[in-house]
Image (tube, rainbow, N blue to C red; front, side, top):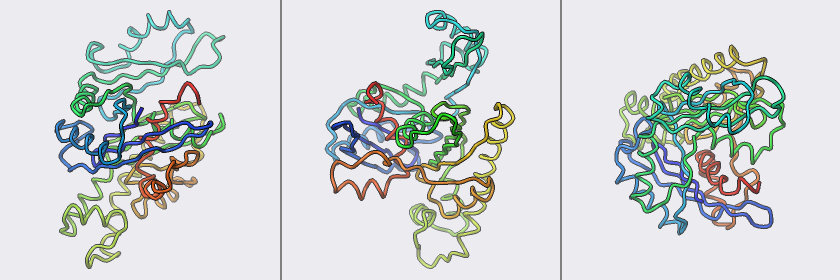
Length: 343
């Protein structure tokens, strides 16, 4: 299955294969999208997205029809709940009634899924991860895929795909608590995890577009020039002194949202302390962001490497993997679903 991450600024595709116990990249591709095609995590123009997917697969020789994609945003609810310990069959019968107390949507309007998190089921209570996504949100994505002649086999959640990528590449110890931040163009996924178990998940409607909009407005630039400047490239006669305070203002807003999330987590968590921050997403490379996070939280901050334990099958793709690595963590996490029974 091909991991297909449909973002606000681009579509990312990754095709992996397993050879002699090693996972390798067979194909990788990134196709940019105009800024009005995917807005607030909803596909506004299905035809354009379908055309971009078809072009992406054709340009990179991706033959597979089966894809795994993911969603995020306001239509996605993730909650860890505590329930009386029960058998799998009892839980299946009880989960819908339990979910009604925690999901702010009509049950008939959502696709519901769950996972038991507790490993010890001998006590009176067990932790269950509850996930609900509005049906129209899923249809919004699967319709575009079907228009492109692709079969959506799995619809995941961005934050969990990020966790899959982290889990496979870093093999974290069970007592290690970290924050995974995926900063996209319009949404930031935050997933605080202990070992491989999600403790707290939140999507925030801030992202790289805020940097681009601010640079465009303050420096009277085109969208393309602002995008380039945001990522640290030289544009015309724009000086470092002119752009740095603009970037800093937006960084402060993003750091504030992360701070709010961490504060809420600390208030509700049972003593778990975040030890490290991993950054992913195309906007994670904005100059000054990593330093601001280190300064604010006094924690180690590093870029999540989605290819730490994944090799390129062809030497030619190694350069592309390096260039696009920050953007590809979610797509890698999705593609890894192909091997989940064998990893």
